[in-house]
Each structure stands twice: as C-alpha cells, then as structure tokens.
Image (cartoon, rainbow, N blue to C red; front, side):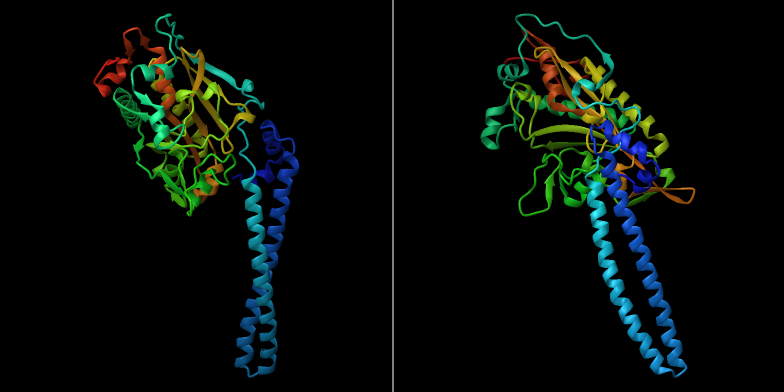
Length: 426
C-alpha cells in the first residue's frame, strides 16, 4: 500500500500518477486518506495527553497518600478512573480509525513510475524491443498447438477435464518430459545468475495474500479453500516474498535474489473464446519465478537486470519476442512499472504473453513491513518479481514454431534436459 507521508509530501505527483492509470477521481480519493490520517493523528495526540494526565495524577496520588492527605488522594483516584475510561474509549476509536485508514489505502493502487506511459488500453502499451524472426511455416506443417498436442499425444485436455475440469490438462510422455526439461532449464539458468532456489508452499494464508496485494481480492482470481483462510497461490511470488514479512534486514544481506518453481492456480473467471484455446489460458500451470528485494536506489537497475535475464532465456529457446512497457491502465494493481514479454506463435499468427517483470517499489514492503537499517534509520525496501518463465505459452510457441512434417524439433539448449531432439508421432 502507499506510504501516507509520500502522498502528503508529493500530493500532486500522486494524483497525476493515479490519473495515468485512468482514475479520474484520484484527488478526492487521496484527500480522503489524508483527512482520515489527520483524524488519526489528532486522536492519537488527544489519547497521549489523556494518558499523560492520568500518569501524572497517579504519581500525585502516591505522594498524597504518603503525606496522609487521603481525601485529596481519593478525589484524584476518581479523576484517574474517569481518565482511564476516556483513554479506553479513545483507544477503541483510534483502532477503528486505523482500520478505516488501512481499508482506504487497500483500495488505492500503486503510483506508476514516471517512465510508465499514460493510457487505459492495451494499444497504449509501448513496444520497447523486438527480437528474432517470425517463423515461416509451410502448408503441410502449419497446425496450431491444440492440434499438434493431439497428433503427438503429449497433452490431454479431455482427461484433465474428466478428473478436475476445463483448464487442468494432463501432460504425458514427451509432453511431461518437455515440462520437466523447461522447469529444470529455467531453474539452472536462474541459479547461474545468482538466484537462491526456494521451494515454497503452494497454499497461503490470508495474511500472506494481504501482504503482497492479492487480498483484498480485486479480481476474484484466487481459489479459496473451503472452511479455511487458505488460498491456492496464483504465483510463486506470493509465498517467496512473504518469507521476508515482518523482517528487518542488514545492508550486507542485500540484495536478496530468490527463484522458485511452483504450479500456479488462477480462476480466470469470464475467460472464453478462441483467444484462450488450448494452452493459451489455463486454471493450473507451471511457472518459474524470480524475486528480488532491493534498496530503493538500486531497484530499477535490478528491474533491467531481470528483464535481461528473461531476454536471455527466450533467445536461448530461439523464440521471437517483443517487450512492452505497460501503460498506466494496464498495470497490475500493486506494480509501479511492468514490462511484459510476448513470444510469437507461428500457426496462430499472434503474440502470446509469457512473462511480466515488475517493480513494486515500497507498495508491497509497506504491507510486509520489510525494511533495512540505513544510517541508523528504518527504510522500506523495494520488491520485484518476474516470470522466468511461465510454461504454457512457451510450450505453445515451441510446438507451433518448430513443427515439421516429420515432427517437432526442440531447440538445442533443451536436448540435454529432454534426452531427445524431436517429438515424433509414435
């Protein structure tokens, strides 16, 4: 959530940033937060004075008792009892105001970075880089991946639907090995880049969802577990970042670089049609996630470093890609800046998103209470994360772009992991 002192000291910039997201009523929204915070400050001051007055009178009671002035002491006891009741009422009122303020802040998204373009539509996103050559498929090898997976019997949607439901496919044979190969490849590359591997739980509690901004659930994307406050994770970012909830780090511990593989679960409510066919959108999918915890002055250097890492993966997989600097209206709720990576799928003739790399600045760390000591002061850290990479659309592009009449050739970098160079029809 946003830091109140930054809203107060940079009010016009905060309003302008939220307007970049397409929030026209940004000024009254932020002003309401400042008004509530002022009420909280005034009430805190009143409470402090009441407590101080009670403490002074309590000390006076002891002195009066020692001097034998019992009637005066009794009178003060009555006054202190009244002050205690007043203090209790003020404390309850203060807690209500704190809850109200937190609720107001939870409803406000992050302020976009100055380099984020204004806009509310996908067409307002800026293409910052494009790499590779789009595949030229032949007439006898130009099938979309949903036909290829049936031809080579490597993924079964019908069987997954029977066991669970739509969007929960079963991978088998070469399809399962390809999944395992990609996960191992991505993890190995991250380890070589200095990331520490984590295997986190795939179920989180409510506190973890609140800390990284998945709750309150703005989009209803998470699967909740009945009769509990547990949720299936939408991404490994959530449990991995929560490792450092309520933490005070040392400067020498920074930066923190972590990587983890998990299955991910998303409801994707309302998703249907040709754009979500096959592997294009699933309710359960595998993903390798990279996470960094950085000092504020180094976080945007780290963001570029993480983007370079994703670029290297896609180049080694020989997949043509482009990078988008997301506009304000297309940013995730908690992000200050996000770069989306899309690969080109030859048979579909379309770009498919495979990674988002984001800097949240202090938005998550303020909820996490994740800080470090700098010059004797407590400073909120910046959190970043990125998909490196999400598997389904990577697999879709690999299948479509590398198909031949005799089979699907794999990029050489994956062969040591799969043990075969080509997927063939057995």
